[in-house]
Image: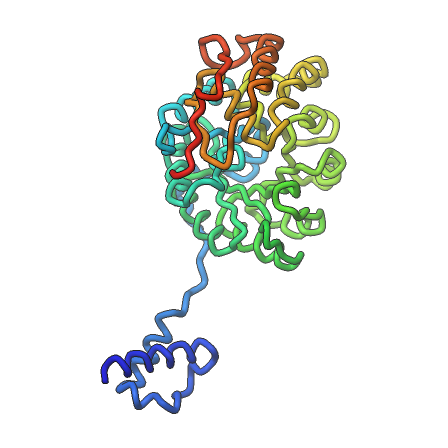
Amino acid sequence: MPEIRTQECRALASSALCGTLGRAPRSAARCGSRKACLQIRAAVMQSTPLPMRSNELKNSTPVEEMKKLRLISAIKTPYLPDGRFDLEAYDSLVRTQVDHGVEGLIVGGTTGEGHLMNWDEHIMLIARTVNCFGDKIKVIGNTGSNSTREAIHATEQGFAAGMHAALHINPYYGKTSMDGLLLHFKSVLAMGPTVIYNVPGRTGQDIPPSVIEKIASSPNFLGVKECMGNERVKHYTEQGIAVWSGNDDQCHDSRWDFGARGVISVVSNLVPKLMHELMFSGKNQELNEKLMPLINWLFVEPNPIGLNTALSQLGLIRPVFRLPYAPLNVEKRQEFVKIVEGIGRDNFPGCTEVRLLKDDDFLLVERY
């Protein structure tokens, strides 16, 4: 009869989760030990996760210092032909950002394809960036998730690995209520310095000012990466809330006319020197207009398709895509060659001429 007893114990443990904990089930005697059944019920209970409060973090940076960052790049993650990370190419991309005055990196964000990584890959890449470059550039790990449990766990690991701050998006797909948004953000803000990312085009839900204003008093709140336009940027800056433009095509005006601290940029992967000039050297409408053909080209398809294609044509990464991403068509690739020539090849990283890749040059990886 041991198997019958085991099954009954499992049933009793299951019933305990439905509210019977604290009183003896009528059939407890059958399983041989009421104490054993209670131990099974206790084993499935979880304690509340605790925030990382250590003051010994390797790269601990005061919140006010982090708020001063002007140019933050959403760094690309390159791949080997088998779909694994190409860490040599990644290090080279990061080194280029450092050399041209970029102050911070978003690691594993949308541009870095964090949504195509498992959490082991994700945290490893954050840890590597911190270990190799954390003394030269601020590392902001994208540890957001539509699951609060996952977001807490990943953020705890990211801060343990030494990242300077976290980037958190609002829960997407399933979405939630305004009360749910507040509870989600309060949970992750407890972990350490945090930038909130508002991009309704990706999440399907706007984070309204009423939510941001309620969490802005948190000592770990850095500010907002805002993609809803410059009027929203102005609304926050008038209240003293730090904002980074999330739109490359609007960031010049955001910075100089609407009070944004700077930009979290995609195009800075390609022209970091020019983006540094745009954010640090005062209003420059001529330079801003010069960059518009490149910016518009980058986002003709959802990011990071254009960036992956461009970096491949510049020879900075292997032309390897993790599906579902695929390169821009040959007409767009020809257009990129002309855009580079118009802006000036010396403004782009790399030491060779921009290439016009054929369709067969690209490798699309479906299992990785």
